[in-house]
Length: 219
Image 1 (cartoon, rainbow, N blue to C red):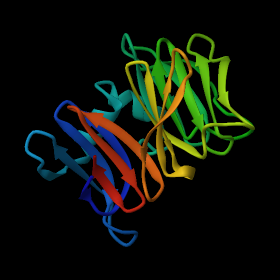
Image 2 (image 1 turned 30 degrees about the vertical axis):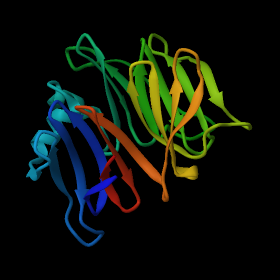
Image 3 (image 1 turned 90 degrees about the vertical axis):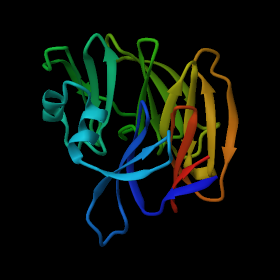
Image 4 (image 1 turned 90 degrees about the horizontal axis):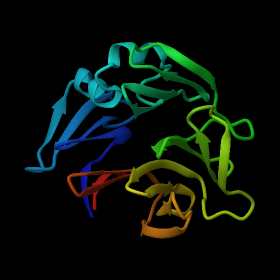
């Protein structure tokens, strides 16, 4: 495991040739955007516009109107030009290809907003850090359908999720573990263990990146 950035990382977005992330060196420094290339390992400064386009997509100018904080809000492309947005306080919208909201509501569990969301097979999956659960919502009516976890739970403060194929990689920050959940069979298994809490995991060009308390690493 190699550290590629030492500082505070707020959000990491995978791209076709690496990652782009929103960060700052320390609490006293200004926020900035960095980009890491997987082809040559170079860490470069990037502009905010590149980050916004990468995270929000080609409809960025319309999507941003429904965000409270586009760095910390959860934004998902749903296909056919549609976008799902969930703010930090659990307020959600589904935007059509025209950039207008055709559904709005609240995504919460026991009074708490999701710590992250992911899209798989026409369903929205949400992790809830305070309740140690993952919940699947039907994207057509946003009703909850399946819950994994609860009183007896494989999760301990689940945060960021990254979906690849049928697997959701969940950052189990309370146990310093990255675990993965099969979204078809609902099987849960350990994937990586760390010496400090893990807050985010993304994959790009077969490289795996994690955000720990001490910075951003490539595994």
